[in-house]
Amino acid sequence: MGAVVGTLTMQTRQRQPSRDKVDDELEMTMVCHRPEGLEQLEAQTNFTKQELQVLYRGFKNECPSGVVNEETFKHIYAQFFPHGDASTYAHYLFNAFDTRNNGSIKFEDFVMGLSTLLRGTVREKLEWTFHLYDINRDGFINKEEMTEIVRAIYDMMGKYTYPALKGDVPKQHVDAFFEKMDKNKDGVVTLEEFVLACQEDENMMRSMQLFENVM
Image: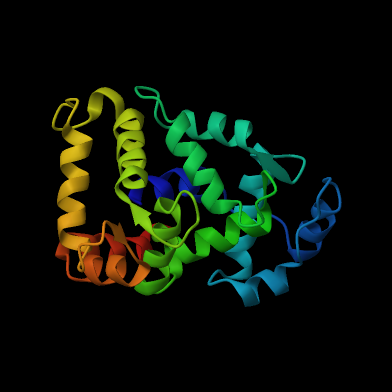
């Protein structure tokens, strides 16, 4: 999850708001898709109006039309992982943000997901991560799905993967995860099993606390 947050916020953190709210609303009329008003988004997320202005400018800079499709998303994401292949992981990440399942991400979709990852409760962050791993959206995570995500992460990290990737490493990791998470040994992990196992893992809990200081 750290890769998710770091990538999506790296550019927006570098931009500081230089215009007032009126100018932001005028800018929103210039794109093909006009996002919801800042007041509404402020009420729906854990971001301040100023933070939303910064996020919007960063989003519009990369996506002038106001929406981003999967290919554009992959291209943007790949820039942060030049030594690996981020396309598969970006595909799954795109699907997690595309909550409307229409093949595009609007600013509202982006900022709602980011709000959960950065400012949500531990439970909300874990639920978001669960849905990322639940590729077929059946409410469970099976070993095949988890293997796909783990392998995609290894591919994305490329030569910087440590320890060096061997053919059976993703499977070993998935087996270890399932041993901890699949409490009733039925071959799938439910949301509650996932949340409980993560909350019992000190390393996972420490990583969750870092999200609050990313922006």
